[in-house]
Image 1: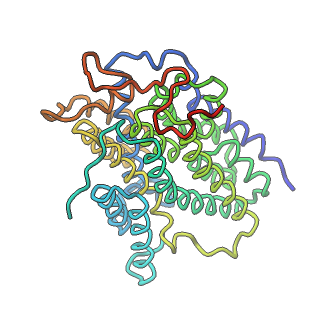
Image 2: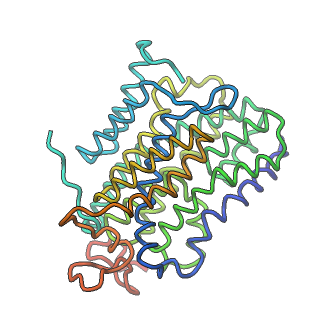
Image 3: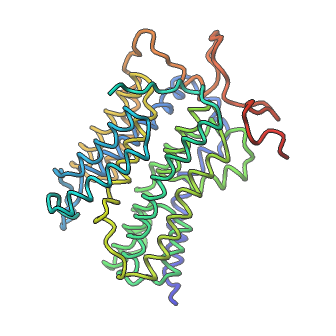
Length: 113
Length: 279
């Protein structure tokens, strides 16, 4: 069994780990100024919303160029967000989101990605 | 349908918050399993051995960069290009770690070092919501979100995908590809406790899509995560808005008699902490 790519995995791990570890291990992050604390408080909703939006609305074509996606996936993600906002249940939202897009694809209304 | 009230940050009991965490984790587990399976299938198609595919899932443990590595290896790109792109893609983890750092500052350094390795999009989303609900860190809750819900399903699914291969139906037929963005969006909604968070979330999404279209999706995510909070900070909190979230997350507000510090003192536990009394 080939192990030739394991050094690549180690290198990728080595460049990833500092981003995850430095703020957790560096002293003083709990003594930040108020403005910095407010900023960090807002990172969570901001970056998670960016992840959801970009993952749903921006895809790359075969040439590697990003373009705006118009598709049923928006509605599925929006449905989940609405369920969470109204019912505070992520699980129900995810089941409905995945289920709705699966049904639309099975019916041929929504194309497979 | 009436909207359910969001519990004020820091006011939920540990047991209740862990129950919510467990329920939320089920969706994340499905997402991690689906993507791990697709990654394993992609790695197999690119000629990765099961050992190589699993090594990436264990050592790197970052989905987007693993998918890129598969594509770049298949395309014959240099390792340097793959490593540089990995660093770029995973730079957003710096924001996650910075946001979690104040919560876990009193944990032993070796423990924080291990926590860092399993800090992913999913782990961050589950942990920050859980910590803010209870107003402090909960290491067991972190492991639940990071390892049980993400690391184990991702790695098991990788093995299944790379070994069983083509006999597995396409996960996107079951809608598993929308679970990740839906989970991130849903968890973002759970973190919105006031106008500033709402503005930061909307700004992050809009900026992310704009930069993603103009340049690159990964750059969009980073730009949205960096710039969105600045826009949120510029927003004025609504009059009378409960703005305790940040105080609970980062210590008590001066002169606020109801504010609670999130750092437990040595040996101190919440009244309902199941870990109380344990060694």
